[in-house]
Length: 214
View 1 (cartoon, rainbow, N blue to C red):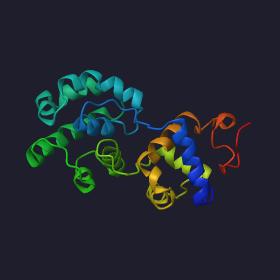
View 2: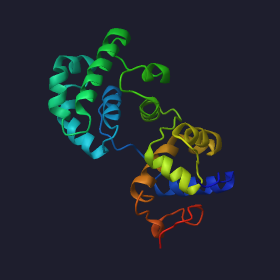
View 3: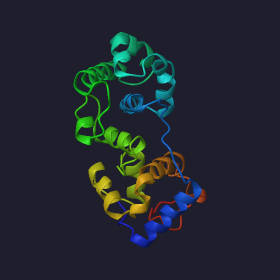
View 4: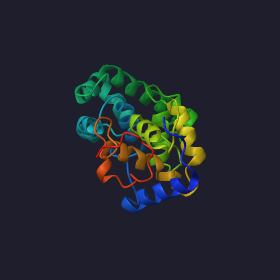
């Protein structure tokens, strides 16, 4: 685990990220906040590409909690059976849809605590929704961010909670809104787990990773 980088180095890193991609966006397809919640919940242990493929037709017929309930668990399964843990995920989608209808009038709450109380929605999912839909500077730490943060020194931590705190405590405030997207995309396409693309990395000279590839 690399040491935490100083403020000025972090500012330079995120200035470069911003110049390369001024307005990064998540790669999960959705049509409203409800379908965003469902898509993110389905993405656990699955790729965004796989989730998008599974939800393309699902969201055309079930883009509200009530429509999802009308479709039923088996109907959800028919659409998402290409992704991992699909039976359990379908169960959770139906359960969370029922709660949204019965307790929130079919609307998705904008509170982290309320979101986390929904079946299949953990802190990471709640943070993604808060950030992408309501533009809160919430940091959703996934495996990509955990890897990049610890390799580079941008936001090191022994677990995802520690990495989340490191982002919130150290990354300059004006970069907080897009921080997790820049880090996810950097991890997904550049700082890969097995073969990091160090020669073409825009922060190579600032990164503390000791095993940089040539």
